[in-house]
Length: 128
Image (cartoon, rainbow, N blue to C red; front, side, top):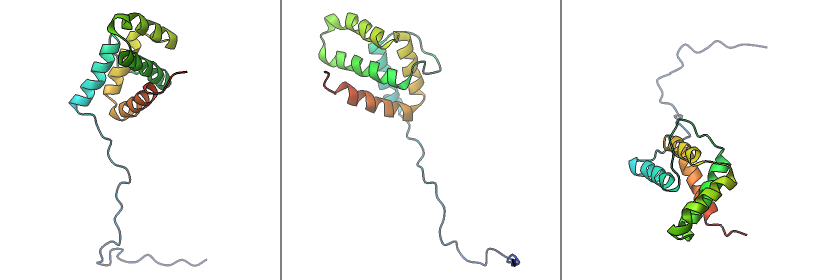
């Protein structure tokens, strides 16, 4: 096997043929209005304290919030409280857990945007 000496100057005075650029865009962040919308919707549907971590699984959060969103869209105010409580019970979550998750999502806008798309899509699906 033969080896070749390294060139004395790797630059050779030429411009690079190509330049590497980042292949990913920086994450899009929710502005103050978007963050407020996430928190307001969660606050309207739930009540409780906020904490730093999500507190429930993504799938549980998405399915519970989709059903709660469907409730808001399709039910009169007079029956929402009782139905809201039964929806949360059916999904095994508390208002505090949903509020904590909404607070966490307000600090993680990429995750929030993805989850709200799933929630919106799932809430518009026809139920069996």
